[in-house]
Structure formats: structure tokens, C-alpha cells
Length: 320
Ligand code: HEC
Image: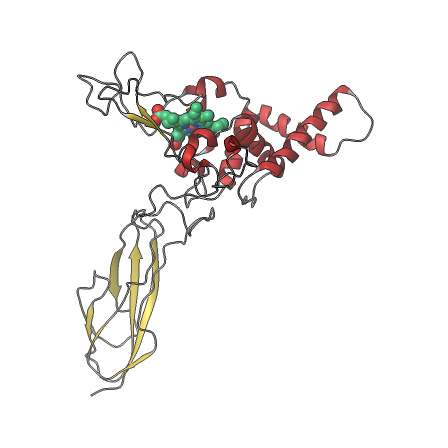
């Protein structure tokens, strides 16, 4: 953490222990306290505060929900931004729709000209993914970089090299920069402001980009906690069998990122000899060749990031 940020945090901490005697400094501190309290008051979704600085979290909510109004652009659009009975523009008491809150997907149309073969500029999903990091896994440093420079790290619309093809942005627009997004104003926010926004965006519930996608962005539905770790689940367990040929089952194993696992079955030392057919699949066949006894089979699964997990299947062979 840099020194400026530390000083600012210290300021917030001092504000929380302010006494009743009034001077200019303490009035300012009281103002910070008011913003933090307002931030908690207006947050439209439950917040996962675990491991987060409560002052930064409340102040971040104030900046996102009151000052920046990020959800006006980063929800699905005017139709779904508010609850059916909570649209302030219909003179109803405003109720933000949690199902679209900061989930992105608002289409600003073909840019720069609705009539041309230009890419649509679409707001992005700012909610954390199953890693718990906002914007689908961005670090604080990456977030600072994006807001301070406007650089589009996801490179959604490069500058056209030849004729516009509906995917590239024509000159003089710089395709490597975010369009419509008000980074030219936000870039002047202080380090503390941006850290507070990042803290708040880390605490809101995850929203799926596409509920039908097989690779899920969120851990469990609506959760902001990291998803399940890669886990091996080997079956059967302690099962009595009479046939010499049985099938093992690793299909209940879990991959932390939803991508396919690789499987490897081996026979641990001490277990009676057996032969394994297709030992690199989830459901190999084994021959129990050593007569009666308890056989063990060790399953090792490896996920796309190279993380491994193991579990053991056991069968008690009672046949002849
Ligand atoms: C006027 C509409 C508008 C507002 C207000 C707005 N954004 Fe954006 N934002 C966009 C659009 C549109 C994009 C995508 C731009 C593109 O594709 O060129 C975007 C992109 C982003 C990105 C880059 C995406 C990524 O994954 O890194 C971040 C971060 C972001 N916005 C954060 C915020 C935050 C935080 C706020 C509130 C403080 C906010 N935005 C307010 C329209 C807006």
C-alpha cells in the first residue's frame, strides 16, 4: 500500500474517533463519516464485507451508487434497471433491480454511427467472479490502470486497419480506449477513491454474463465467495462386489473453473494387484485379479491451472 493511501486511511480512522469539539479538520472528518453512512444506506444489494475495510466499503458504495451512478450504464438497460414497481421516472419510489445490478450488457448501439458497419459499444459486467475479484478477476492495479488511462484491457474493439467490418472502430477513434465510459472524468479520482470503489465492487454479488453458458462466472448462484476448489471424488467406496470386473467412477469430481479435468487412476502400494483399463478416463474398468480382499484405487484429477486433488475408491471383493 502506498504512503498517500495510508495517510488517507489514517484520516478516515481518525474521523471515526473524532471528539465533540469542532474545528475545520473535524468537520471534514464528520463529512467522510456522513458519506460512509450514506453509502451503507443506499447499497441496493447485500455486501460481502469479509476481509474488507468497512470505511472503504461504505465510501465505495457512496461513490458507485450516489456520485458515479455506475449502474445507470452498467445494468442491462432502462427496461430492467429498476424493479417493475420501483421506477423513479414513473414517480415510483426507486428500487434498483438486484438481478441486473452492475452486471453490464447495456447496448449503446453501433458506434460512432448507428447507420454504419460499426461495433456496438456494450457496458461490461463489473461484478466479481468466483475468484472474488471484481470485473471478472481484475486486480486493484489493473483497475487503476483502466480508469487512469482508459485502456481497454479486454480489447473488445481494435482500431480498423482496413475498411470497417462491424468489429473495429474507424479512425480517428482509438479502438484501444474505452468509449462512452466516463474515464476522462473518473481518472482524476484520488487513489483512495479508486481503492474504495474497487473494495465495494469486490463485495457485491456476482451476476452471470450468460445464464446458459456452461462455464459459470459465479461460484454458487448469486454468491461473491470463491467457488469450490478442485476436488477429486472417487467411487465406489467400501462397496462389496462379487464380479471380477467393476467400473470406477470419478465423474463427481469438481473443477474449480468449470473446465475439463484430466484423470489418472493408479493402484496404491499395499493394495492387491489389479489391472486398470483406460486409466486416464473418469470411468475406467478394472479387473480384480488377486482374489478376495480390499482393493484401493487412487484417483488424481488435474484442472486447467495444473492444480491436483486426490481421492481413493475402495471395493471389497467377495467373489471367486
Ligand atoms: C455513461 C455510461 C457509463 C457510466 C456512468 C459508467 N460506465 Fe463504465 N463503461 C461504460 C461502457 C459503455 C463501457 C465499455 C466501453 C467500451 O467497450 O468501449 C465501460 C467499461 C468499464 C470498465 C472496463 C471493463 C473492464 O472489465 O475492465 C470499467 C472497469 C468500468 N466501466 C467501470 C465503471 C465504474 C466503476 C463506474 C462508476 C464509477 C462506471 N464504469 C460508470 C459505460 C459507463
